[in-house]
Amino acid sequence: MYRSLIYVAGVTQMREPTFLILTALAGGPRHGYGIIQEVAVLSATRVSLLPGTLYTALDRLTAQGLVEPDREEVVDGRLRRYYRLTPGGLDALRAETARLRQLATAAETRLRALRPRTA
Amino acid sequence: MSLTRRYRRLLLAYPRAYRREHGEELLGVLLDAAPAGQTRPTLGEAVDLVRGGLRCRLGRPASSTVGVWAVLTALICGLFTAALASRVAWETSRPQPDRAEFAAVFTEAFPGHRLGEDVSTARALFVIYGQPLSRASLRDLLLGDGGEYQEGGAGGSAVGPMPTSEAETLATAQQRLRAAGWQVYEPTSEVLQTCADPRCDPASQPVETVLVARRGDTVLRATFDDPRSFGSYLGVELKRAAPPAVLPVAVLAGLIGGVLAWLVFAWTSRRTEDRRRAPLLLGITLFLWWAPVLLATASLAPHHLDEPHPSWHPLWEWLGQPTLSLFFLVGLAAALILVATALTPRRDLHPLTVSLG
Image (cartoon, rainbow over all chains, first blue to last red; front, side, top):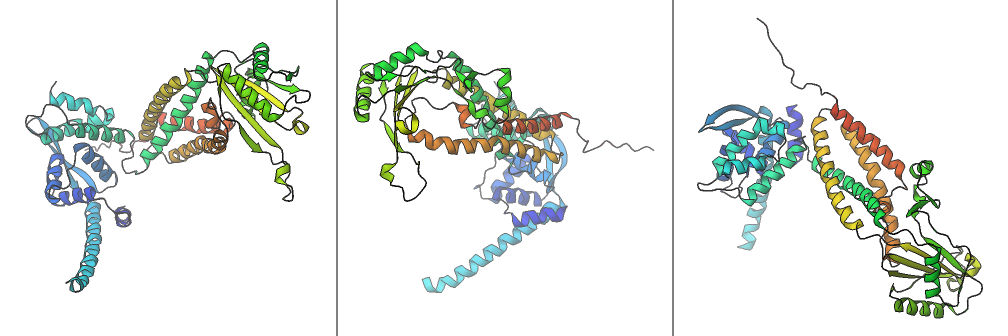
């Protein structure tokens, strides 16, 4: 099952908020508000997830088997449910990271080659 | 009202089962994310929650196309509901013109021209093969001959030789109709292709000229043709225009129908997530409902643009109905099977297991 999910994640580009959510969860299980905060930090406040968007993404990632609920706790009378990456989610994140790194490396190579001519 | 209650109200956009499972959790995130002193949700939050809730109602969280299918379903159901409502609203129209009204208008527009005895009138606003719709005509309506269901009207032709030239007749008719309070549209002419041989001289092809005018709820259509081909040089039709109630009733019914269809789609989609035949049934329905719309629109639009239409063709004609009502019926059957599938108990995806000892 994971293999097919990785394959899907490999051929269809992962959108940036999805990548950021998976990256946020790579550091360990987080609850909804924790994910929102971590995504803001990771993107240097460029991506600001709203709760409705976050839960639509979490539902999708859960259905795809990339994320799963971890545990629940009640803090100040508010229910917090933590989410964690599944092994498939970890593999999908690795695959997407490799893809982005390969693209970034290719772009850097071209830019390095360009530098002497523009100087 | 407190911020918590306002958020709870917005969370009603989510289905009940989802609220039971995630409502408190989502509310906690919303309250955690709200800056101190905030008393009501921001517009962005409200839009985000409603959008998230509507998406959640469609089920199938991993699907990237379910929203498109929901919109297509809501749109076509809204159009069908609007068409049905517009037909009902047509009942507010006056009856189609009778022989006396037709003869009076003919004399008013074409003085000196002799109206033939054979004036046809309609016994209902809409007729099929000249007859009002009845149980006996349902078979024709639904199984192949639905295109014969058309607006009735009064019609007749001039007889005898044309007393004045076509141009003069046309000019006189326009002048007299305007003087009598008709809104007269610019006449249109079309060369009729009666000869398929490329050697035929286009100048020798007959030309059909159409004059359209409207006064109040009545539309006049006068057609000038070659009497050698059509038996008369002038044919006249008088029909009722769509009554004013048709548009608002259709729009309102369309909106209601669309929203209800969306809700039924969402409920069915959630209830059939594990049913493999659900996408097939939906595909059959949407194809059989949308294909007539595309075919009818492609055929009607050029005709609509070719000559003045003071009153649009009824909405159902644009939807290919009842011409292709068989398509509609088969699509409806597939949709009902899909809804019935959703009504049947689902296989338990997470059966309860009890270990003893």
